[in-house]
Structures are given as C-alpha cells and as structure tokens.
Image (cartoon, rainbow, N blue to C red; front, side, top):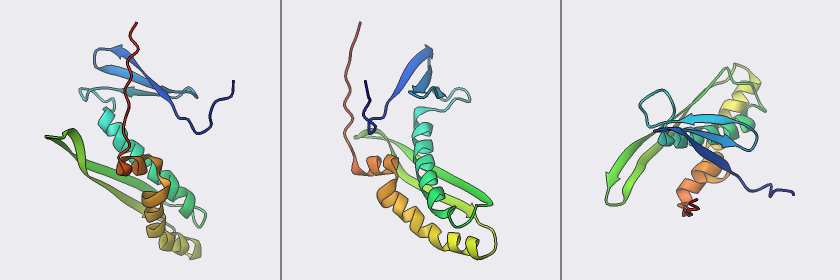
Length: 143
C-alpha cells in the first residue's frame, strides 16, 4: 500500500520513567527526556526543529553560491507559564554564517538575509506551522 508522500509521522515510545525514544519511519531515533540528563527535552527538540528546518532552507539557497566556512543557527526562547498554560515566547533564531572571500562568497553573503527571510516567511514548515497556530488534535486508544 502506497503512503501519502505529504504525510509525516513519528512514534514516541516509553523506555522508562521520564525517558522516551522517538522513531521515524526511516529508522532514525532520538532519545527524549525530562531534562535530568543529557537527552533532549521536547522543548529543546522543538527549538532544534525550528533551527534545523530553517538551516536546511538557508543552506540550500546560499551554498549554491559558495560552501560556507562556518554555519551555525542558535534558537532561543523564554518558557512562560501563564493563563494560557505553558508555552514559549520570544522565539529568536540567529544565524552565524561565514562564507569564503571571493565572488562566490560575496554572492552568498548578499543572498543570506533574503534566504533567511524566505525561510521564515514561506519555506520552513516548522516555524510556519508555529506562526500559523495550527490546532493539535489528541486521540486516545487505550487497550
């Protein structure tokens, strides 16, 4: 049976108290925890997803001009507990990119601000979903 190419899915399975493993359909795994050890928390994974998504977009667009010498994306936010419940506020994405000297590097540097804008405004599925405020539906199938 063919699967819908637009559908995305991960499964999260409990390993032990406070520790889980996320798996994708291609066999990838990520350990998830509560923050008591080195495992990523769900909030950190959300920030990593924002950073990873926009980094991929920007890298694809700029590296056509020149291979970066350094490429880092920092993503930070403030965790808020208020009447709306727990959520993040003031999410900030900072690109730290160095391109080589020369014509290709100059072209990549010139494109960088537009590539970041295009990722934020149109391309990055993760940050676009957050900004659009898409509802999350939960279902329970107890056995």
